[in-house]
Length: 163
Image (cartoon, rainbow, N blue to C red):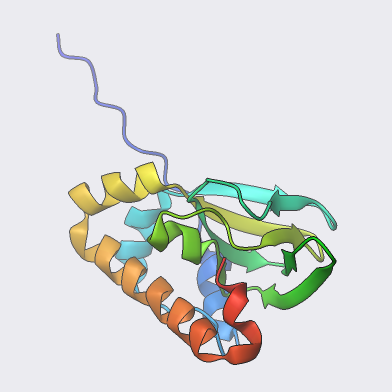
């Protein structure tokens, strides 16, 4: 008798999809997927919650995880030997971690929750799996996140906010 092949867990991303649709910030994520594609993507994402003030990642960290923001807001800080400077507030409907995700370099800033947040994490390993199994979805996600990064880099004031 053959054992059943486990099906990936599908998570409800409707809150994230709604946040992207309602986002009004200049560097918001543009919805790259249809309903069926969001459903397929859900099995590659992990839900992640932060309390207000909780650290998401530190400047210099080697992690490449990309985070999609469903609710709340994140504060992005650059730190040097003299001070800590807030570079940006990232609202719901956008992403953080895109700089390290694409560049394979350490995090360029520290990110912490300005308010309680619900995020969706996409690790580099899960993105590789997505690319192999669902290349059209992976490409759409990469292009949408690349668009956010391009907007941030074009804005002098928020250039360092590409984390």
